[in-house]
Image 1 (cartoon, rainbow, N blue to C red):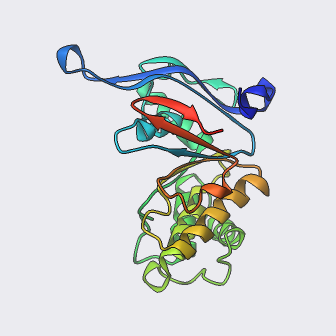
Image 2 (cartoon, rainbow, N blue to C red; image 1 turned 90 degrees about the vertical axis):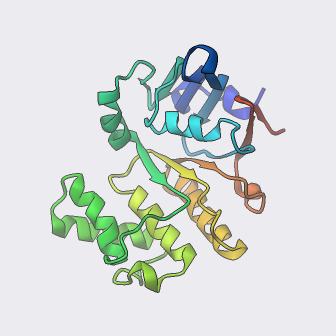
Image 3 (spheres, rainbow, N blue to C red; image 1 turned 135 degrees about the horizontal axis):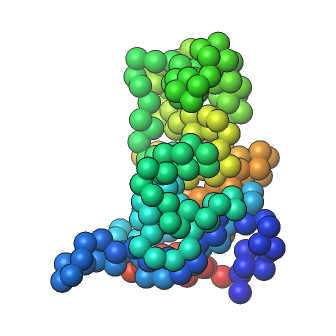
Length: 235
């Protein structure tokens, strides 16, 4: 039994029980997840690893309210989303989730502050409030001196930290990162991972990182391995 299983239910931020996901139907049906249990507690920094096609992206997409499970139980922040309709997913994503992707997906013509502030404006903030909050978020990820820099003027690691600041817009309790260090060298990958870990340990976010990068495994609270639609936690 792992540490997360032993912690009280009240501390759970993510609760996944016996979740399956099947694509297609009939003879062509493919079962990507085969009864997954995945509890994550408040403030944890968890890494999800596994080979290509193992089901980790499907699981992350269900946690991120991009996909719904075929069967099983999924709960985020105490809200049961197992039976959520497709029309409910945008609200759930806005309420609970910040995404960090392998590609930073920043707008090249905008400054770091504008890239982060744009998302805040889309969430309803005025431009002045969005710019001020964007500055604070960039400072939180160590880029307080790069507010006016455009993506082309930043290193790969700095661009990814801008993407992390953008993911924090609106203060979502859960941060999901999909291969955030894959395009980075060892030094920048370590800095980005340390930034994500700090979000959990110093700011109270719950962070799940999908990664193949064994150079950063030592920073995780837990490493969960997924293969062929089933998960097994490392001892």
